[in-house]
Structure formats: structure tokens, C-alpha cells
Length: 289
Image (cartoon, rainbow, N blue to C red; front, side, top):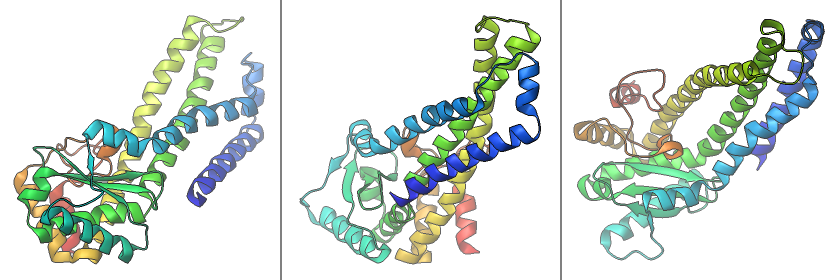
């Protein structure tokens, strides 16, 4: 909750700073002179509501979404020796990390993968795929669990969701201003909003959204290195390296949808600015160093 309050406060502070800068630089006066009638403070408020609402709803429904999408079978009572071992490892690492016991789940997949999700670190879900649980050895699975527990302990789910909300706020804000400028200054529309406004706003949102996605993906990759380091602390560095090597032997792909992919263990693919995970090779090198 404190993290949410801090991000909301940061969002408000940034909006106030932007409002002051706009006034000091005369941007508001320039827009008025061009016939661009914008209530900047009102637009900032609307942008914040639009930007943050989706992220907060996504965060609040993340566990439900994960269970439904991945068909996660939550382990309330272990049914066999493997499930009991998994239950005990999660309990042990959660205690070491100083968080409440998360829900534990297993989902069927032909890919070795795992993810963590949840509204906060004391109400999380950690789930592993059947291939990871039954094809990797216990030391490797233990390291993967340590990686996911670190995501939970670091509050990465909350941080990324709120960061996305802040970014969305300013994408909408600047896209709306650009749309107004195009409509009033370039197309000389003097009444209401013309087609030019909606088209230019849409194009601006797409363009700014792409740039924003690059920023979010960079942050996600950064948190993966931190989660690997946490997994190494909880399970041992050699175990974490061996787990990443095992995943590397499998392949570098992921089958987790959307919001879950950012907190999976198995990322990769072509190295681009839009990757939410560093390559497994980069992660192994980081742990070695």
C-alpha cells in the first residue's frame, strides 16, 4: 500500500511540476495564442485517471487473471512427494525473504517456465510449469523459486504496474496536446474537434506508446537481473547459474501472456529494445561477475 501511495504522490508531483514548467516557459500562453483552448490542470487530472485506472485494475486482478489464463492448479494440500517438496521450498524461501507465504500453483506447459504475480508481496501467487517441475532437478527448481520469491519480495509486480500507469498518464497528456495543436494550428479548425484531432491524437498515442514500451521493457530487464541475484542469495549462486543453463538448453522462448511474461523466469528471443527479459546468456554472465 505504501508503494502505491508513493507512486500516486510521485504522479501528482510530476503533474504539478509539468504545470509549473508550462506556465514558466509560456507554453500555456502560446497554446492560448494559437487558439488551442486547453485546461491544462483539468487535462492533467483526466490523464492521471485514464493512465492509472487500467494499471491498478490490472494489478488488482492479476492473480485471478493468472489462474484463469494459465489454468493454474493451486496447491492447498500437497498430493505427492514433489508437491510437498515444492510447498516446503516456497515456505522456506518466503520466510527468508520476509514475506507472507504465497499461494503455490502448477500449470501445464510444454515449456520450462515460472512466474509470480499478485497485488502485493503478502498476497502473491508463485506458479511453476509441469515441465520445469518434473524435468529440472531439485537444485535448479529451488533457484527458479528463489528468483520468483525475489520478484515478490521486491514488489516488482506493483512497481511495474504503477510505472506503466505513470507512463500511460503522460502518453495520453502529450498525445492530447499534439492532437489539439494539429487540429487548431495546422488544420485551422476553430470549432470542436475535427477528424484531424482524433487521427493525430491516435498517431501520437501509438508513437509515444512505443517509446513508453521501450522504457517499461528496459525496467523489466533490469528487475530480472535483480531477481536472479536474489535467487542466488536464497538458493546459491551455482544453483541459479545451473538453472539458467538448464533453461538455455531447453530454448529461449516464453509462453506466458501479457502481464505475466514480465515476471516469468524464461525469457529471450531476438535482442531488441522490446524484450522484457535479458537473454539467458546475459543473465548467466551477470551472475558469474
